[in-house]
Amino acid sequence: MRELTVETAGAELAVRVSRPDGEPLLLLHGGPGVPDSMQTDIAPLLPGYRSISFDQRGVGRSRCRDGRYRIDDYLADIEAIREQLDIPTWHVLGHSWGGLLAQLYAAHHGSRVRSLALSSSSLGVGADWKATKRDSFRIELGRAGAGGRLRFYLYGSFLVSPEPLRSWGMRHVMTEVWHDYFLDPTMAPDPDRAWLAGCSPQAMIRTDRALSHSDGSALAALSAYAGPVLVLYGQDDIFGASEAIVRRRYPAATQVTLGGSGHLHWLQNPAGYQEALRSFYAAM
Image (cartoon, rainbow, N blue to C red; front, side, top):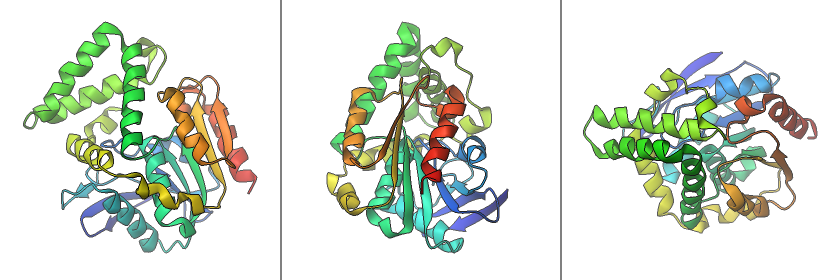
C-alpha cells in the first residue's frame, strides 16, 4: 500500500492507495468526524481494484488548516486527490455519510464518476440530513436501552467542553454509537482504539452544521447522472423506512437489501457484502 499527502487550499490529506494498477476506486468513509477505515475493511473485498481512500479533513492523520467543513471544501479535497493521482475517471463507493458525499460528488463532477455505489448512504442535505439523524438516533437509542441512552447523553455533554474533555467525550460517544449499529449492542465488538483516537468533534459538529443548512439544490444535478448505481442497505440498518428516499432517487439502480446485516456490512455479513459488490462491478 502506498501512502501520500495531498495538499489542498485548506487541508493536508492523508491518502492511501492499495496498489499501483487496476481500475481506480475511490472509497469515501462515513462519519462525519471519524477517520478512514475503508482501506482495511473494504479494499480487501475488491482486490483487483486500485482502491484510494483518505482521512477526510480534520480527522485521523489529515489536517484542516482553514477550519472550514462546507460541501464545497469536501468536493475540492476529492478533486485535488484525483488530480494529483492523475486519474481521469474513477468508480466511487461511499458508506454512510460517505455515501452522501459520493452523491454530492457525482452531482457536481458526474463526468468523473464511472459508477456510484451507495452503501447504507445518508439521505441528503437540509431536511433530508435532519431526517437521517432522527431515524438513526431513534433506532440506535432504542437498541441502547436506558443505560446506553444515559451514557450517550452524558458523554455527548462533553462535546462542548474545552480540550481534552471534548475529545474524551467524542471517543466515548463514538464507542456508544458503534455498539448501537448492532442489534444487540452488548455483543458488539469494540471499535478500534486508533480509529477512535482520530475522531474529531470539531469536524463532526461543523460538517453537521453545514449539511443541516444546505438546500436540496446541492443534489439537483444527480438527475443527469447516467452511470451504473448500486443502492445497498442492511436488513437491520439504522435509517429505517427513510432509506426509501435514496432508493427512489435512483429508479434504475441495482437495489440490494443485505440480510443478516445492519450498518457495518463488512463485519455483520462480509460474504454477502463482498458478493453484492463484486456482482455490481462484474456487470459493467
